[in-house]
Length: 348
Ligand SMILES: *Cc1c(COP(=O)(O)O)cnc(C)c1O
Image 1 (cartoon, rainbow, N blue to C red):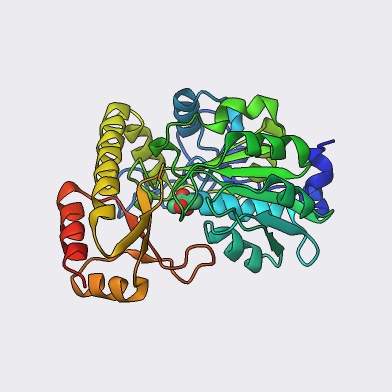
Image 2: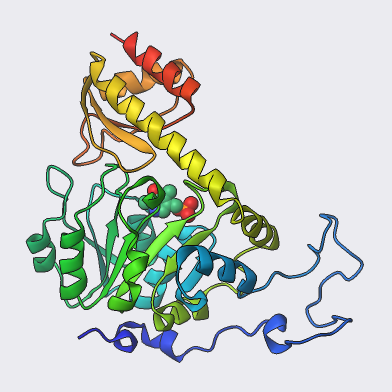
């Protein structure tokens, strides 16, 4: 049986969160002398002399509407990387607990685990980058608190089988984190639609990829109200700055532009998928539901350096187990993609 309280670290369960000035006073006032701000104004203009809303209520209300969830099911982080770190700090006791991840996958799970002194257990994805469910279940130990599943997966690009994920959600009594950083480029429905079915589910999404706001640093974690309350309790009080809150609220008004951009990127991705296999340097192009493509090439290191010489930077993933000989290529503009294809065509 899944029991949230028994999973939360005892010190986290016991602690009281920081009470900010804006927490202690709620209501209307005209003179704010409670937060040691500079009441003369801000060199950055606007109202940036004031601390931002620590609970991001306006932003969460807007996101809730777009994502079809309740505001209290949303945690906002300084990038989803902050959510990953806080999940580890909330649930994994340093030196004893473990997380399970499924490589080849996103590197931050491991980095965050190492920082927090949390053991990393891993089960390699199959040759077609799917979940070996039985092996995963057998690798779960009493210390395993978190299971990270990235779908569509970075760096492989494919979506992971929904039924396999559902089996793990049903069988694992720890927390299953589904990282959907690239969900906007996929055809599948987000797991946010099934939050009420699984109290052990956390879905991560981000404004860094499809939304084009990587520089603002805003990531989302969706989960049950009780689970989100744990993350809210331990987050730095003002983790989302005022500029980010304002700019993202404005951007959320432009969902038609998002749709057009995603459509264009997916179209460009499909063109690359067709063109790349025609090139002699390319051995295999893996299927992609993301805004990048994993490509197996004849001489990855040499091709990588050759592209660098031409001013084109891709990601060399060839040293990663399961991705031997592979480059990960982000989908660019039409012109950039053409430049890339021309460069690879001229490689020998
Ligand atoms: C890019 C990426 C993220 C995004 O992280 P942010 O901190 O929100 O920019 C998260 N997960 C995966 C798998 C990614 O590739």
